[in-house]
Image 1: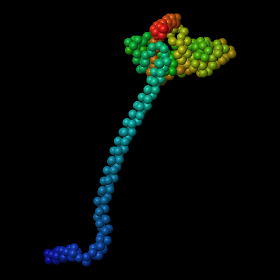
Image 2: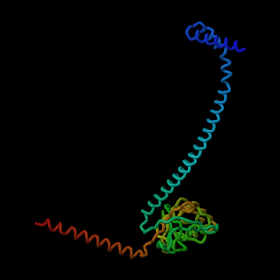
Image 3: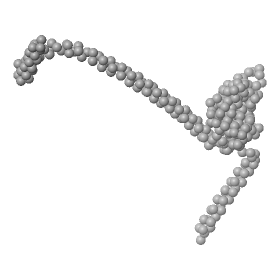
Image 4: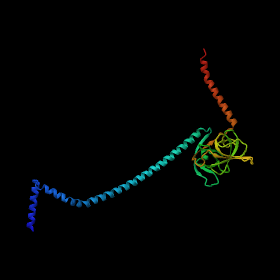
Length: 297
């Protein structure tokens, strides 16, 4: 047995030397390689299968992790987008409010809504300004579109506002088109006011703008209140049924203006204005006098 192994070993060495120095066995080696190729492929199949399975598992795990990461990033971007949209709308509302404040002659204070009365039969809101800010009872409140109501309760840092649509609220108004006066009362519907005791023959029609008349010395004159939505004439009734929609966004406005009306009467304001104009004319004349005298020869 040992001799056979020795002979095989010597023969193998001789074959390797001859194959390395001569090309005698090259065709044989090529044929043997062709025959053994399927065996090489079968021998390598478990390794390739294991590597492919490992790669798929790793790729799936990476894809799942990347998917979760992308979902989280998308959620964060959506949140930022929502916040940006809210900030944009808030900026628009503040710009509208500031533009309306620029058109108001009286002194104003910007407030923010912080609460709504939970009682469904009353239309009241709570704002973040109070007596420490100079808020007083009966003070008019408006948003960028028109009058909202008036202050009915004042606390040190907050105040409660009664909206125009409350059933206990009424406001003197006039039709902007012709000056016809009427009383607008709340109906309990946040989107509707009614005009009381309007003659059936009165010149009022759909689309007319109602503004505060200033009567009663509660609301300043000239502020938009509502737009006439419907006029119903009944020949058997002495008064027409007139319904109007408030111009203010009572259910949507978050920022509002508190108006500090001028306590002077109309006569006092006219007299003060005339006096101020007279002083301005006198000052202008005094400034022009030296230059005029200097031109004389």
